Amino acid sequence: MAKEKTNASTEIFALKYPEGADCPFISAKAKGQLAEELLRIAEENNVPVVKDEFLSGILTFEEIGSAIPMETWEIVAKIFAHIAGVSSET
Image (cartoon, rainbow, N blue to C red):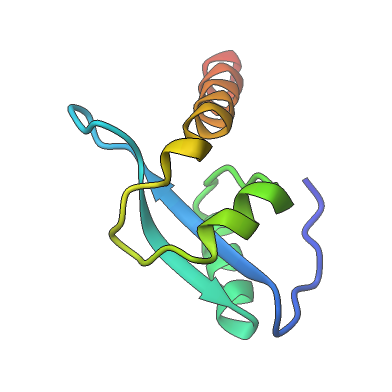
C-alpha cells in the first residue's frame, strides 16, 4: 500500500482486538506529524495499514482505550477478516 503524505488534519488509529474481548478498542490515535510517525512504526513492524475515511470519521470522536462504536463493528470485522486472510497466505 502506498503511504500518503499526512497533514495536520489527517488522523489515524490503531485498533486492537484481544482474545476474549467483546469488540475491538482504540489502542492509539494520532494526528499530523505524530500520525506520520505512527505510520512509520507500523511500516517498520509490518503492521497492516488500511485507509477508510468513513471509519476514520467515526473514530475521530472516540478516545484511546474506548471500544469502537457498534455501528463500526461490521466494517472493522471485514477489515480484520481481510488482514487475517492476507497474513495466512504469506
